[in-house]
Image 1 (tube, rainbow, N blue to C red):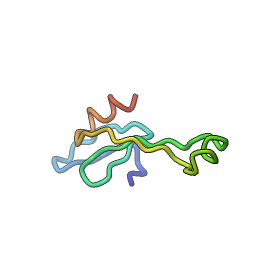
Image 2 (cartoon, rainbow, N blue to C red):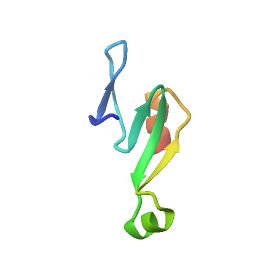
Image 3 (cartoon, one colour):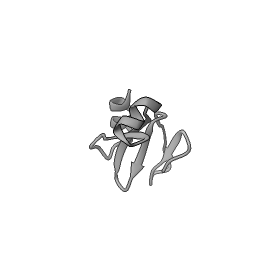
Length: 64
């Protein structure tokens, strides 16, 4: 999981990442903690959504 706000790829360029995005293998995901009442109903503390992209630029755009 990415803990920093930037992502360095093979070329050494740095792309500013949105706060709630992380990368698992090659795909970017959006993740948010659910409110406590909803977390109890859903029985899961976080919501995950695949952004279905390998591009950090597109992932940032989709997450906002």
